[in-house]
Length: 265
Image (cartoon, rainbow, N blue to C red; front, side, top):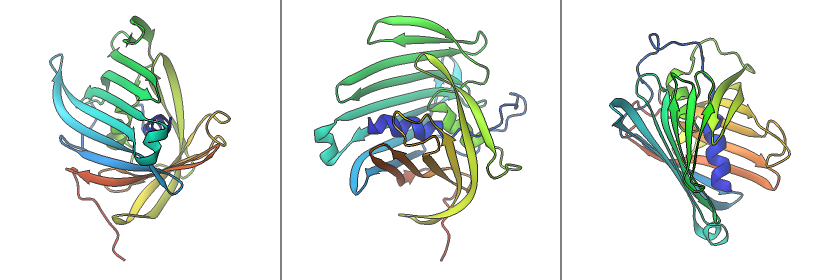
């Protein structure tokens, strides 16, 4: 459950971008590159609960040039004995527009399993959902400019509107997850320098509006810090839940496209 909460929130909070850009005006991918890899360390209070890793490779899918993004999360240490989790998420998205073509979710959370593949047809506005566990294939209508759970993170990093964003201004995005369309909202809170294991990092601070009463204490109980440099890398996420607080910090990274900026004391 911890991995699922963090992966969904960590990726869905990074949704602040303009949906008015057309394919002809979109810039080339500038914030990441083939071979990028980074890891987040998740902890619950003083205990390490799990790790989440994200990798990116350039590939071809149905004769289209794509980025293949992978996210993997697992519980570690004591947490693994109480609640074993292995979550795999993958997305194939266009290397120019960022549109997702294929999404994979294969999870095992304490015996609760799901194995779903989604193929996106943006021209017809349809998502073909293959539930491999149930042996069912169904088509669902999707909204314009839709993103999946993984592709939205990379879309944001590249197409985030860097100028003209006001503090406390909110944004939203269309997302398709499992069998449903969602609209997520995110509020920009301004800039903040935070301490990390690598040193002090200048960050942009965001707060998504999430559903309260089921997992989270209140509607605005999640905060995300993203590096202000050209990498737009996640530095920290903190979520206040009904039974405490979950925190995720950047633990390791390699093959970033741009220098990772650390403030000198």
